[in-house]
Image 1 (tube, protein in one colour):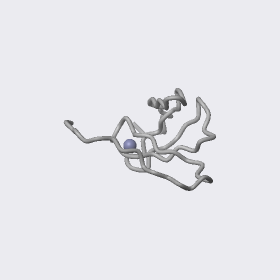
Image 2 (cartoon, protein in one colour):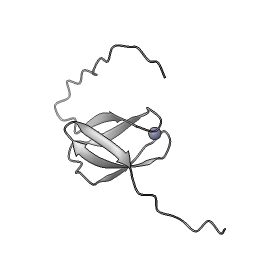
Image 3 (cartoon, helix red, strand yellow):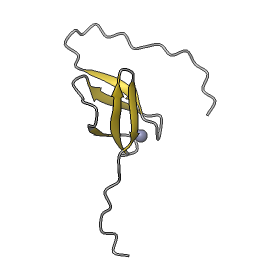
Image 4 (cartoon, protein in one colour):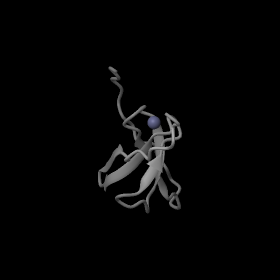
Length: 74
Ligand SMILES: [Zn+2]
């Protein structure tokens, strides 16, 4: 990936906005994170369905959530 673009934060005049956008470490997709999200919370990326654990909030850091192994039948 060699993106070289200026990061321009979205202007949001809506004072009632309770979410912010973070970047998925898996697919670079945007994830909406509630501002009241807590460290340790598991969020899911809408783009790639990755489950991510909130490691830190300021700045926001996401990490792979421990995968819950389903029964794969093998
Ligand atoms: Zn993703």
